[in-house]
Image 1 (cartoon, rainbow, N blue to C red):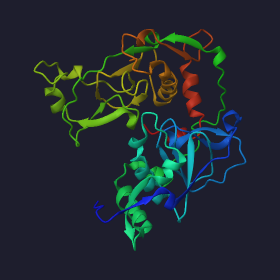
Image 2 (image 1 turned 135 degrees about the horizontal axis):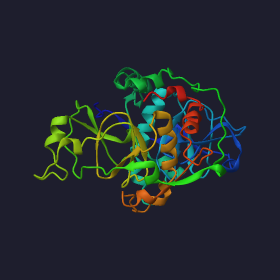
Image 3 (image 1 turned 45 degrees about the vertical axis):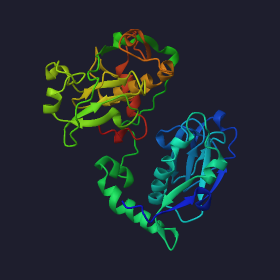
Image 4 (image 1 turned 60 degrees about the vertical axis):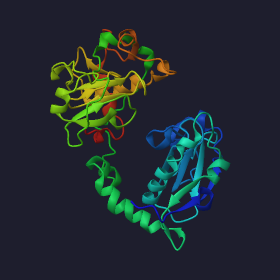
Length: 356
């Protein structure tokens, strides 16, 4: 992409930037209106609330606190945190293709607003992004065509399905289940999981055509940070020196949950194929039950709720993880209720779209 002839535009020149008037919704009861906060996940949606204020369709939200600079396009109506989010209403005819393109450009300005420097309304208005031009104005048609004809065809098949809305919204099961954690029981991690140590201190050389994913201490892409081949993994040692171990010590079996113990601590992902990983990752294998994608989704959610315990540089190494606690639903005899966990995930909307 040649940006030589592109031009800088202030965000205030292409958007009306304003604060939501939804002041008391953090305490609102649960509803069906998306509530946008300063999270960098789930398209900015942190919960669903009851609200009559839903006039924000076809806009972009940008976080000014928390995950500063995180930008999301919304084709639907929603309400937003007045403290943490600013709403960008276009002064031009925007669609999802242009919206996604602009979100990427806005997020590239994140680095300017770290270390407590908030991305407030005035700074947002003055921030500039570089855009292709036609007659010295933003070339919105070029942007739309570029996303449609160049970027989307390069997406993985699952992502294409999302763009084309070819995903199943219905649950696997129509059975409605209630969650009552009062009856749940605490378990040590080493009662539930066989906890393994990751391997590499120094990542092997990447092979974009490789078939073995490398799981690192990241919070996205199911933990995958690169791809590798067997040959490179076999000859590469833990630290890059001459000492080495057999390849079966570096390749981990599938059907487990990987949890980062450093970096993005506490992020948990279900792995369905064999992989290699960083020493900053702990692979967890279920001890007394066969793990499947539904149980894994349930457990990953619970594991990630413990992230707050490992902030500020406190690592969740294997020496600490065995005596960490996880609260689980139980059967009448006090054992983990794996069937309830599976059935609960199957009862959720979109569970038919879990294609791991």
